[in-house]
Length: 125
Image (cartoon, rainbow, N blue to C red; front, side, top):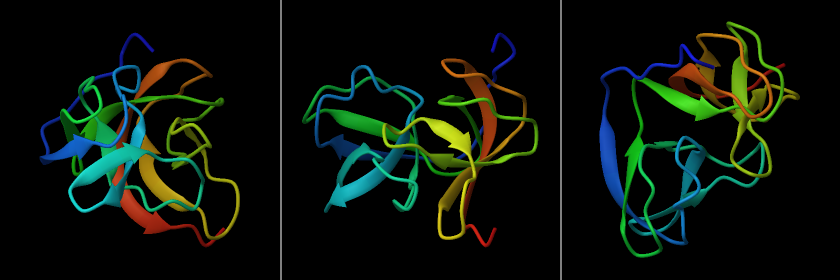
């Protein structure tokens, strides 16, 4: 979305476990000590959202607190609890046990970059 904005918050550096140069604003998980990669399931433990475009072995800046932009993988409404799809994109919460990584601050459609507030909780829906 054109209005997507970022907010101040905490960002941590981790080593990119793969080429993440095309994964800016995707959900990220820890895959090994000090290494990060894109989430691949709704139940993955979401650490945060990638803020840069690192190649494998470079530093991935992962925002873990605050607001961020996120790539939308399905139609999402304002206030939706957002989880990861199988590609690390944000989609609305689906079932109990999904890991909620953010709350939508604006609506988004598939392929949009939209604003979210990062949160860490397990769905009880």
